[in-house]
Image (cartoon, rainbow, N blue to C red; front, side, top):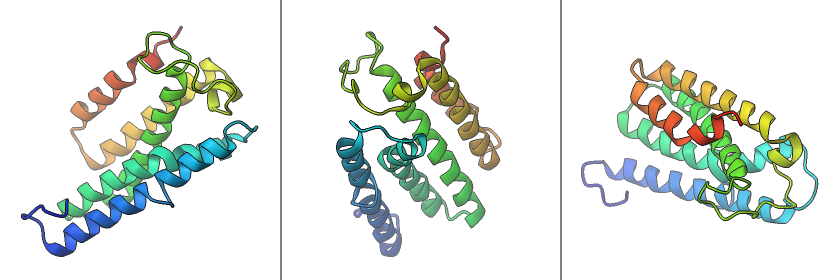
Length: 167
């Protein structure tokens, strides 16, 4: 990012800052620490959601902020894309939790065993429903920015297909 010559020095600096903040101690690192430190203890759904947002939502938020910054769009677009990123981040974390107990998911099985997750709190079926709700909300926000969001929405549906299929 720092070497993209087509962008001004100021924009490149902001891109690097967005990345550092998303991955650093107020983002992904903090979320991973919370998950490792507190995951074995009972947590409220709000605490799990906060940790999940720090692990993934903040990172997705940085990506959409970068796109917004480069596109020079209005501020309204940024806030809608941030809501998209938060919803997508929650869906991703729920999908990851569901994959932990699915033998054909490709994920190492049992990593979340004994861990306080949405699946351990609510059960598989309710998490699937919540994941679908987050995906629907993400798509709704995406369509507020892009009138033709079919390609991105289709990609999201494909990525999350296994988790949203009812057992």
